[in-house]
Amino acid sequence: MVPGVTQEIRDRGGVAAARRLRPRRSRARRRSPGPVRRGANASAGRSEKSHAGLAAQRRRRGQPRISPSPCAGPHRQGLRRVKVNGVPHPAPVDPRRLLSDHLRHDLGLTGTHVGCEHGVCGCCTVLFDGAPIRSCLILAVQAEGHEVMTIEGLAVPDGPLHPVQQAFHECHGLQCGFCTPGFVLSVVGLLAEHPHPTPEQVDEGISGNLCRCTGYASIRRAVARAAELSKQ
Image 1: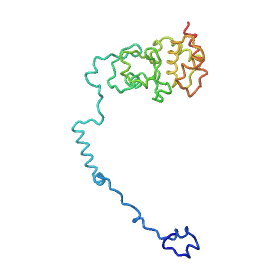
Image 2 (image 1 turned 30 degrees about the horizontal axis):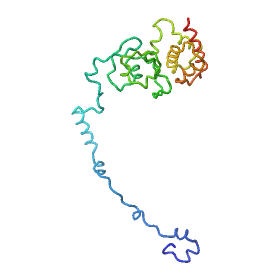
Image 3 (image 1 turned 60 degrees about the vertical axis):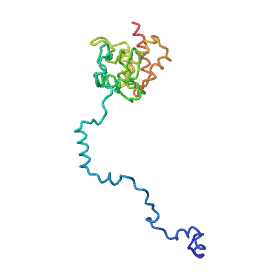
Image 4 (image 1 turned 120 degrees about the vertical axis):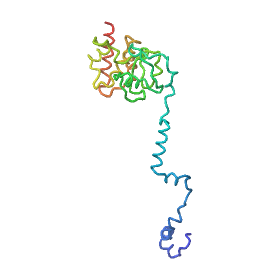
């Protein structure tokens, strides 16, 4: 029974009506003040001038905002170099730099395209000691003492195309071309392991590369044609 409600009101509307007619308490009474966070007023009271002064003081002290590379010191000297397309290059200084970024930004080899940066699309595929790898999943320092080949090093400058490149050209195995360098290098690695690949081996060899334009029929034909040209 709802207190403070007469029998007449209960008879006319029942309990629901009685609840609607019951006087409501103010929000001030119902709301609990709750705990006050420590330091909230102090943080709110800080002026922008004080923040700017602290930042300037830190900069004057020479404190960097980002911690320096742990391998940017003298102990990086004397390490093995990275051989890219047959040319030795100094080892990258930053141990956190991806191989794909090192190739593109440090060495200017922009034929290595970057798509998903998660090792899914295969656009950044390069040859690592002759085997296809995703350069976005390996650190540049891991390539020290190894040989990396990008799409720029596949054919001789001012010379004929590599058989795989020629096959992609003849069979129109590309459209926009963004994924093509990764496909070409994956096929080079495939033919090095299987000079006469079966259709199943072809599908497996290019399964790590995604093409959003042409599909894969013309690319499969290009792989078969590349195997023929490689015999010549």
